[in-house]
Image 1 (tube, one colour):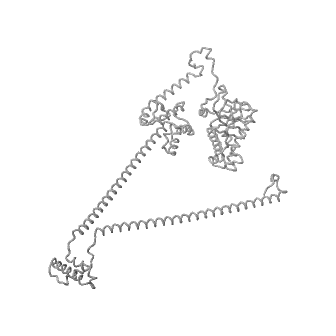
Image 2 (cartoon, rainbow, N blue to C red):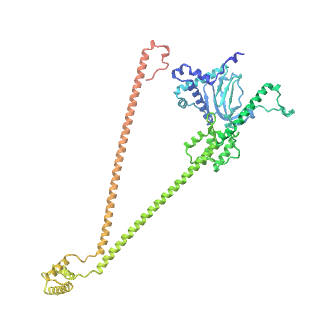
Image 3 (spheres, rainbow, N blue to C red):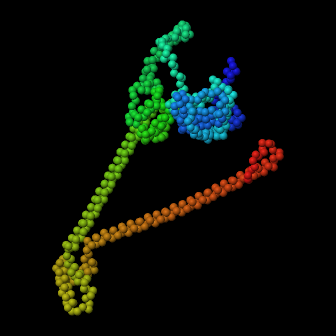
Length: 557
């Protein structure tokens, strides 16, 4: 065995163990699991960057990039592909010839140490140190030609076979419709006649009769056990659906309930080249967000969609999604959402109908009340007119009218006027006596006439009713003006109060900002004093300090 064969192959696991046992990781309490988590987080970052058409540089090791390339395997065809370029310091090492070469410089992005630190659970300085150790150890192994096999989760870097080789996995190249490096076509079949294939003999396969007999015996035992338990298995699994991975996906062409669903099945069927029923999650998300299939997720909540993608995920890392069960769940959710919308619309229509019915009943009540008020007003007016027109004749009315019109000014009149008054008074008294029920004396007659004269008997009741209506209208208008004046006063008072509150808030904000600025200035002054103190102490202790404490640049204070 050669000396190189005795050397152990360096992998990510061994590098993580070595890095975690270093002084820095022991002091920072970073274990091998966290180191591997940092490496896996970096690989996920590189993968997402490549999918976003960005490159990533690994210091001292190489760089990833993606763009329009020249494919040397297919006669210089122009294709879009990912590439990995080693650092120029490895040009002296034997390397496998690359297949793709970029036509123009690519765009690169910086490694997000803060995001990796949040994922790994320790400080970003520790993440930076761990990744730098990984790059240095891999570069050292390559320079020393020590066997190394690095797994990038989507590619592989190795020099186990003598030369440095970097290969992207076929599952990653499928995203770019690229097949791996193909072997040259066999031309021997074109010129030489190939005979029919024959089964291998026992001599060639090294199968002895004893081994064949034992294999046949084991096969018979297994067949007997299978025939014995087959009915029990069929009875226990009669009601269970066949698992997705063990049943044929396309016994009959799958169909959907909607047009976007049919387009979704057609697109996913084209992307699923091997008929596994699964496609990459990122590709599936692009399909769902496209114009042709956007109707499937237009009304679905984002959280529900993410739960569906997680529930139907497959593969070791959950990267692939079973698209047919996902489509069924999406269609069921869309049906439920449509049913809920219909129920909400029906409830809204019922509510509107109820409101319209209540408004109609209220309008009928108001119309009925107005009709009753109008009828009552008409009845009052009719009664007033009837009283004015056909009022019962009071016998004492004529006497009362004489007293009311001439009684106060009878003194000092001439004889003719007095004679006229006496004649009218005698006729009125005679009429009163004739219409009375008897037992009427002159004193009673005069008293009743005085009462009739004192009370205002000639009152127009229709005019009084109309005047009362006008008074009521004026009273309502006066109350409405007072109410509007009160509302306006309240609005003005509320505006003044809000303006005062806003002014107080501005003053409080200005005061807080002033306090924060003052506190920041005081902190700066304190930090500056500490720097001056440390510089003074360092300057005073310089003759006795070690060499590495010597300041390289003057401090500017």
